[in-house]
Image (cartoon, rainbow, N blue to C red; front, side, top):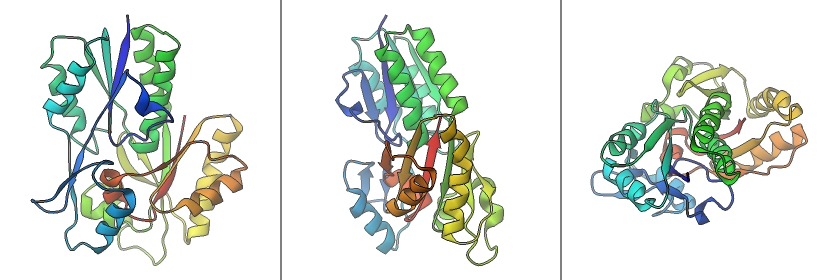
Length: 271
């Protein structure tokens, strides 16, 4: 029994993923007003998107893929016996619901998993799942490995300002940090699919140090790290140097997630 994987464009892809015949990426979109719609990670480069985000009078909105886009991906993988779908957290997007709706529209086995995360976190979950596929595991094992990875995955991140999370409505429990003292630099995390405050720090250096300290036990245990950023490679370099590790997996966060976290955001996921 063969298995194919479908994910969405908010997943940071591990090296070589795009060349795989058993993987499909279903894109989200973002909109600068009603007349300008762009496909995530396709229509604009990251530099073009973030320049537009910085200068535009219109704050972008994001849209989940229609169910039909998932149906097309499922049908394109007709040569495979089973399809496992990994989506961005249902607490951050309606993409999961679109994928589930599409699964009910095709006459073949399709199962949808909510990763409860996005970008680097989803990238690590995808990496674990693809490894199981490459090892020739049966579908039941692949599904369990993906589910276990969802529950083990942790992601810590920082933003240059809470403004973008607030504007996008994705601020979650971090709402209570708004309007607090000058130069508050919180460390945030995604918990049960929602953005939550994890630690309060002041100043960028202390923020970076706090993230590195949180990651130290994971590094000591040999857990895999996936770094991600929005125009903030120096912050990641500082964290990796403090931890004494190489940045093996690094992603530049795309427009859909980027319009929520804003320029200067950076973070690390680990399993």
